[in-house]
Length: 91
Image (cartoon, rainbow, N blue to C red; front, side):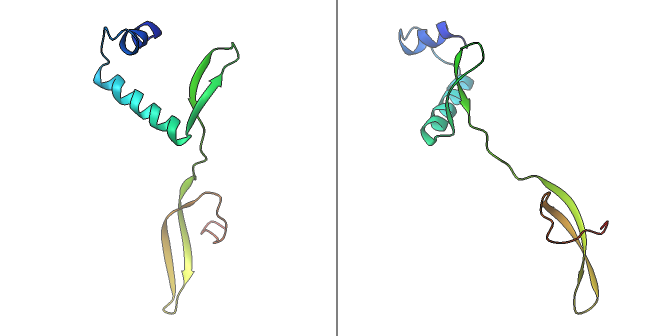
């Protein structure tokens, strides 16, 4: 979608958006309303709408030994990569 097509649809009402373009546009407008996106300017001075980066937790597989009343138990699952509260089997 280029600027002329966008202008023809919104201002001149000569053309229509495809269903995919309508979905992308509505998703971008919702992101603007929620504050997840905002105006940005690149190095060359071009203005565009960009999404604000969000920090996502990094998960990794983990195995650890836990001592229970019956003996030892192996705990297997996903854990935050930077959570060092429980030692792993490798440690």
